[in-house]
Amino acid sequence: MQPRLPLIRSLAAALLLGLGASACAQQVSIHDPAMAKDGDTYYLFSTGPGITVYESKDKVHWTLDGPVFKPEPTWARTAIPNFAGHLWAPDVVHHDGKFYLYYSASAFGKNTSAIGVTVTKTLDIHSPDYGWQDQGIVLQSVPHRDLWNAIDPQVAFDDNGAPWMSFGSFWDGIKLVKLDKSLTKIAEPQQWYSLARQKRPAFTPDSEAGPGEIEGPFIFKHDDYYYLFVSFGLCCRGVNSTYHLAVGRSKVITGPYLDKSGKDMADGGGTVFLKGNKAWPGLGHNSAYHWDGKDYLVFHAYEAADNGLQKLKIAPIEWQDGWPTVDPKVLDSFKSQLEP
Image (cartoon, rainbow, N blue to C red):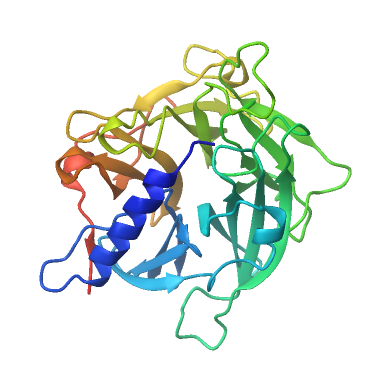
């Protein structure tokens, strides 16, 4: 997990800009985006105070719905003594008539972290059925006990309908654990897997993140394969961000996930398929969805012309020889609008 104080400052500034927008609409400034569709409306969830939520009819024009939590989960300050108020890297899934929102609470630069989940019947804030009910901690990492970091959750279902949570940032990389039928607890007996990692030098103290720049997993099923998307590099540094996206694939959700060359992502593999450029120096922390017969990649990118402020990007995914591709021109062509 990377220190994200610059991220918090930029998100706060972006929210102020958006709330003050009038005739000149701002782009949506968002970090770690996740999306869901309820009825004819799309909902966008982001790292921020209490998890920031937007809604849209067309995936371009967005209005701010406000935070999920006001102000934060009741357990966060106890479990994470240095918790600074921001909840990170949400993921949302719809299952059996309910929406499950997973989120992370963490201390900066530490694996003093926990993943929680909250549930609602609808995402429509005007519906009488709307209302998030927090279910507490799903899993937790503790320094000197765990060599992994309990942030960046994502839940996917295997071909048998069983739920699995991937997660992780730095340390020993990306992990996978099976959830029980409630989607709020780890299944027993526990089944854990290591999916992807970067080299961790010998003798690196267990309490330190180390230089293995990998995080933000997202598992997406397409045809016969599960695809594991991850972010390499450093986020949250504006124009100095080195974030970029890589992928591997597996016939089973538990891996191994191999890149195009056949290298296991658990052994440092991963095929890079989208990188930044001069105008957008860093991009990453994606989610992926299938809507109306089309696959989409959702991510954030840092805009050099706006002092490195992160912006929402939504791009069609094309498939070539069984591998995802995204046209880098989307970095310039897709522009969201935050409506007043």
